[in-house]
Image (cartoon, rainbow, N blue to C red; front, top):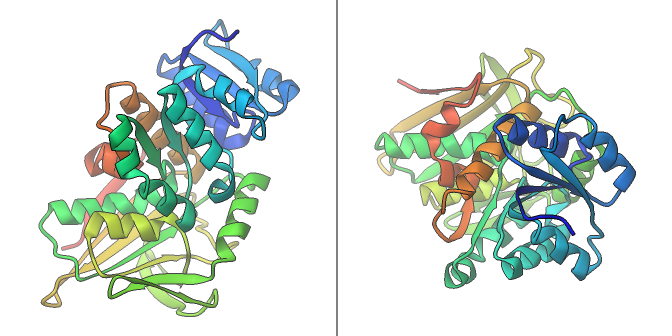
Length: 318
């Protein structure tokens, strides 16, 4: 029987899960390393000194096993995608266990599905959080910063160009499933779909002019939630065309109803490291009695806290 800890990291033997666990332990947290492969979890646990971590094998297809994982901590950090397909039973287990839920989803459908549970979460006094990673937190932070500075938002464009030191099977699988939705955007408040690659354009941010395409990522839903704009497009550089300067970049452009344009850029370091920092900061926030409801990580933390993460800057256009 695993003693109730502060954090459970589901998928802890993976690259992202391991980085998040390291960050939580560095900050003094007690972490349950959870996943399907006990041997790989034991290898991950060997990286930690003392008794900061414990190991729990979990079968995502077994409700009893998921219930044990959800009940093992006060906050469960879910790093196992594709999230649209795999996260619903994890969310359900957390709701039943009165455990705060946090995931790294950046699939449009997964982010939308979790945010649509806001009324249910409030009714149950629960907190559900999605998007705790470079995408969609980086672009949403920019939209929030511009809105706080007084920018109006009749139309919004956001774009991301991450630098990644890792190429993982989990990320590839999530991207493949998400991109099957095609190019998506909001027009007059309605979701519009087109073949992937349609609507390509160029945007200048992070010191370079980049070819970007509309993508069905969580950035789209996060930007819409943060801005209230009827017209929203989220762009990304095509896979394999990320940055080569060792930095990750995000961009937001808000257009007022009267046509005035406001821009902002975020620059940070390696994308997985930023994701680990965002997830750890959000998980820590969830220990402090957060408000119930369904949130994105950026809305829960705020632009200022995200800008304060190591190596991160937000600059508003002049």
